[in-house]
Structure formats: C-alpha cells, structure tokens
Length: 197
Image 1 (spheres, rainbow, N blue to C red):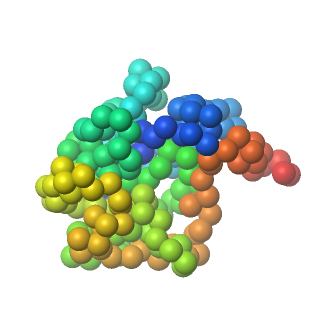
Image 2 (cartoon, rainbow, N blue to C red):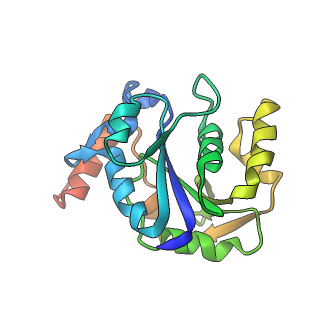
C-alpha cells in the first residue's frame, strides 16, 4: 500500500452504450462491475472513494465514500476527478474507471514511479494516452476548478495546461480493456470466471 495515495473510481457517467444502466452496478461475473475494480485498487492505496451521480445508497453498501460531481448534468470524468481531489485525504489521487476490471497489482507503483516532480502521471498504452488512468497531485484542484468554471470539459486540454508525465503501461494493455456494451460484458464475465469464450 502507498500511504501517499488515495483513489477515486469513476462511475458517474450515463453509460448510454449499456442502455443507460448504471454501469458500475451492472453484474459482471457475479458481482457489481465496480467491485472488481475496488478489489484490485483498495490494497494499493490509503483510501478509496466512488464518484457516482446515481444510486448513491447502492454504492455506499460497497463500503466506500460516495462522491457526486460538483457540476450537474453528467459533465464527464473531469467533474469526477474534481470531486475526488476535493475529498482526497492524501497528497496524491489516483483515478480509474469503474468499467475496467483488469487492474494490475502494480498500478499505483507504475504511476507513482513516473510522476517525478510533475503535476500528474497519465498511463500510456504504447499507442496513446489512457486519460482517466492517472495520478494527480492534490494541488491540481485549483487549476481543474478554474478549467471547469471556464466551461472546459476535454480532459486532454486540461492535461496540456499542466506538467503531465507519461507512465508506460505498454506491457500491461489489458488493464485498459473496458466494458461499454452487453456483448463486452458477457465476454468479460466469461474471462473473469476462467471459462473459454
């Protein structure tokens, strides 16, 4: 466990491609989808919160603090990151989505090793950034608040205004496999249960 790091699991979206279901609570291999992410990240950090804009009581039953976006109408992952930074009890905050259950045991260590004296470290899969897989300094909150207050919603534009470092995850690309459709949900359930697809 890295005592300098807390984590927020982002589950605040509309999940349109999943028929509007609250994606974090959709069943995956016998558990809510987000439970797989929580099980992977909790041993790696000091504290964990869930960013959710619906079904707060159901998320609270998973045993973690639940944070709503500071902005109305599902304003995207930056709003969830702002909620996480505002809550964060440690110097660093890791962010990750609720729909990617294959989080490696060294997730936090890889991000932290790449941070150096930068504002943030963002995972890179060898081809492109994976922008919601990030480690942010708590001091980034004023900059993010200003960006959101100015109408900014594009995560890459905010990162471009900061001192961003890349964390190499090119040999761990599976951790970026996420679930956006019922078909992907079924395939991942089969995989997690160790059955041939």
